[in-house]
Image (tube, rainbow, N blue to C red; front, side):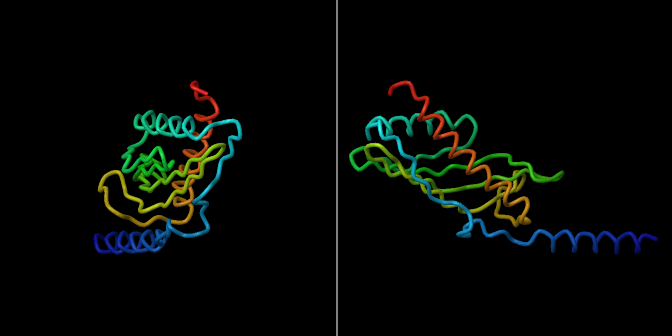
Length: 156
């Protein structure tokens, strides 16, 4: 009886692992780069608004600003979206490099997903396609949050 149960558990584990085929989060099928037009906004004010958003975002996600150059309108940050629940067992984190190019009237943001980790182990893991899409949707939500922040930013 124990052998049968053990065999069944091993078989279920094998099927589960096969179902968690690796999702390539760097695949070109995911939107990585987007340009937002704010024709009435100056470069300096957009730059300040993005920096403000990054500082406020640290309450809901891990943000590490790696490079800023106000004159050139460049900002680089590593952002970790935390705790995206994909199933009964674990939450996932998505680590991505965000690069901002700011000019008068517009900014471009490029998101390069680096890897997905699990909450418990904080190491690279595989995701099934459905869960991977859910994790990457967090990037889109985060981009929309930034756009909303800039629209509502008080210093304009």
